[in-house]
Image 1 (tube, one colour):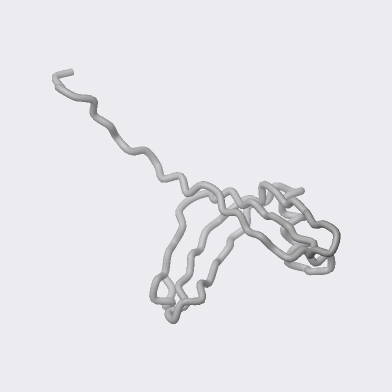
Image 2 (cartoon, rainbow, N blue to C red; image 1 turned 45 degrees about the vertical axis):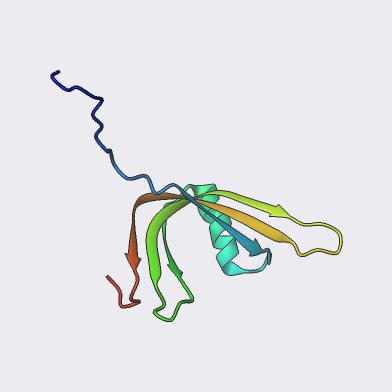
Length: 98
């Protein structure tokens, strides 16, 4: 009560969402798994491997919140997948693992 200015305290980190753009392939087992996970509301682990020379990675748990299919005449059929990240993202910038 003796502060002369507003003091702030950070809460837990919120890693937010990740949106992926894909070429939609109905027979792809990975895309079918994303659709099934969304329907069942199952949390799964994901790992992104970046194409830098160290093959850096980001590993996290997430829920599939959206899987939207789009396309048009003379265009590829695409899918937009939205993942809601839960918990912390583990970064490995050297590609050597945690």
